[in-house]
Length: 291
Image 1 (cartoon, rainbow, N blue to C red):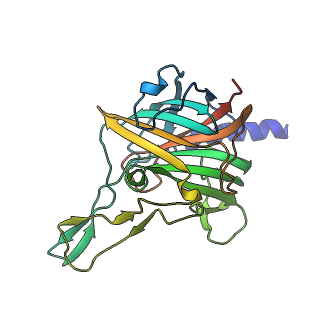
Image 2 (image 1 turned 135 degrees about the vertical axis):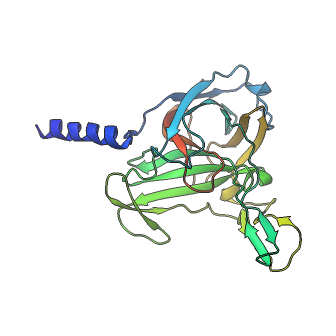
Image 3 (image 1 turned 90 degrees about the vertical axis):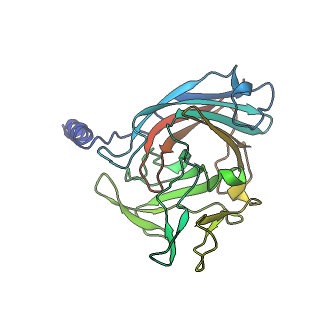
């Protein structure tokens, strides 16, 4: 009887809030099979013609989010392995190419620089590293994940995906921030960059050195675990094409270690023209085959 009541309440919660409880290991299966050769990292699909496309439908993480400019869209996802590396080729529709972020513009009225409204496009992949993995950050469960955060300006300028980790806990821990989860619980979340050089730093010059200057200075020679994932990207005719690769096993403790013949719980999200958490997402399963 209790199980029936709990199931009924859960169904009502989903219907009222639009929050689907994306159970771990659910969603489309993206098969990563052996490739005959390593794809050229250039953002073009020429090397991927013989790799099956898996369509992943993403929907807004929060219903009624007026600042979510992504909406419900379908992503074409392809993956493969060659040698000791895993590769992804992902494309999705986006009517605008946003490759600058919070550009500083000189204001004569304020006698200083003010932050512009430009925001970069972003793509994120998240892989389970233990615990009660969910695709939503605010699901209210404890787990750790490897986060691959591609940023059209702040990471692609350096030719990489920003490699980070996410930790979610009910207990407070160093450098974590408290959030209210959708299940009513308080959750502590930390999202540090992986070890290595700082990928970018911010600036706000006092003197006028130009009508517009970038707020973020990207390190083109970043090294360390933070730079494990190499990337290339292209926007054309209203579509983003993002290609990325990383070693199956980087040997770094802050990365998920991939093995052939294993499956991995994962999630994917798109952030369209936003610097905040306004995104659309979906869980998926990564199946790395021995074939």
